[in-house]
Image (cartoon, rainbow, N blue to C red; front, top):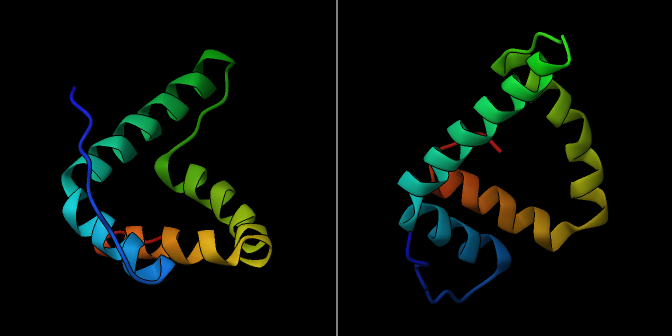
Amino acid sequence: MPIQIIHLSGTPYQMGFEHGRLLSDEIHAFYRTRLAHSINEAAEVGVTHTEASILSAARQHLVHFERDLPQVWAEFVGIAEGAGMDP
């Protein structure tokens, strides 16, 4: 798969939003791949997870991400919103 190069400018949120908008299909595919991998990895050790349980666990860490890395957080939120996803 070739690497796509995109040129962005603006605030971290603005750059993230444009990134999400431009690569929405790829971001959604990556999400589905990572989700399936997480569910499968858990199953291999006898743990049952669903999309909801994985997202619930992930959300517990977002407060630290937002607090400790505000610019990265802003870009992350922008990517999610640009791709039409919930951060």
